[in-house]
Image 1 (cartoon, rainbow, N blue to C red):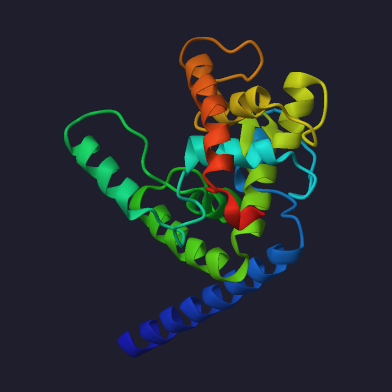
Image 2 (cartoon, rainbow, N blue to C red):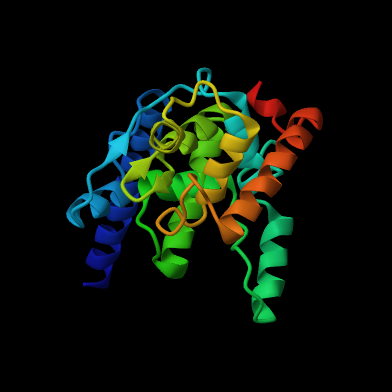
Length: 225
């Protein structure tokens, strides 16, 4: 009985490994058609707005704003920012509210392949997919997918759909301020809006806008050029 259970478990792991690897390879070349978050929005009665745009067409200010707001060491790490993780762990242990230290690579792995939430089990799968996309996709593809599948408002996915929704034009031309406002929405897209932002969203967006130039001048987006 134990041997049979073990055999089934091994086969399940191998099957999952092969299917997940195949999915990552396919999405290296093909745009992910849907995510679990999109499905959840649709089931909740929301219409889905998304419009894929290649990274080469998206205004460079948008990727720089994402790096400034979400992951300043995106081009330096290999999927995991250990310093940010340790800082988040220390702050959380002190009871201070802080973001979890997830990189753009980790967020992309979660957005494309997994459900939101899920605790440590989901985090383990997130780490697994992060390693895969870092090694199979590379930085440019990770950023391209991230900017196209990240939730940027209720029922709105990707920076192109966000630009159309908030500013009335596509993401091929974004000012640093516009890119900063979209980036400011990313952490809490269901509670924030890039148009006429107020409070923390405005302050955070303005802060990101100021750092867009720092990212460009400091070469923090070098892996995308």
